[in-house]
Image (tube, rainbow, N blue to C red):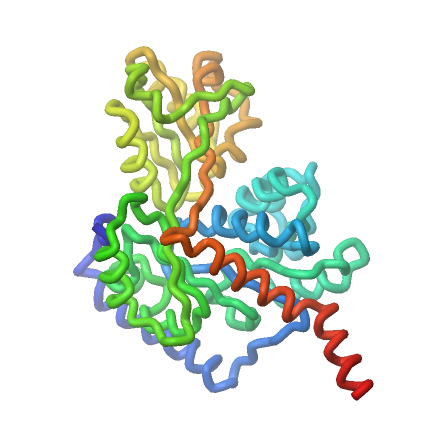
Length: 373
């Protein structure tokens, strides 16, 4: 069911009306050109949402990196949420996680050849990427979570919507989880309904398509999560998630992400006994948290393992104080996405075609041809 994780706080709806009024005024200022949106002569693709919490932005950014970085010098620009630094920072493979944020750190570790930068001011970040000597050969920029940052006008505005928290059924903050009204979907060039069940039926696709009421120029895609084998947090050992039930495993699920309920639901397909230790999104683990993790894991019957996310791995792998038992049995569950309904070729061609058509070399060639003519 596409709205099974939505919870509306009815008593906060009056505050949501006030919040919506402020958001509406801001959007109107951009719509009428009173506040400016800047164009760039480089392909820019934004991956964002209009909800608070995880819609799968990072796996979708990684998907785009995989299809673009083989042909184009690719950069990812994020604000670096909860980082302990200011201004523009260009990440290196040895950059401390707390200086660039957990998601940019993870992307840089997985794709060292890609430029990864953080800056709350996206215009400044784009200008630095395009003009600084070490990054001026960049050919395409992926904006992570900039749907509300309207000072930049991306060439492709990609809106992600969680299948389990459909934006058409949600409510504005603080009663619900929407950052903007559902009508803001009109700014999207592509809408991707994420985290769909792998066995969703054709009728399910049609119901969502009718509910979203997209314009003819907007393209709708659906994606689902794919889980790779579990990987040891402190070792090279691998374990298949499909074998957990037959092994009789008891799982301590350790999360500090935006939508942990979905991960727990998915894991229950493979294991019966789950204890969920849930922390806030982007949480920095304290010595008190480490003590709690050790104690809770010790109370779980054997055989037992810990499963955590790749994003939480960034904040756990260097921590001191985890018990030997925890370190020996801790695993990371990597995830990837798959475009459904055999639309992956169409999706990939839309992305690569846009970048090819709007690349700097293509623009220069057009200008040269026009001058010759």
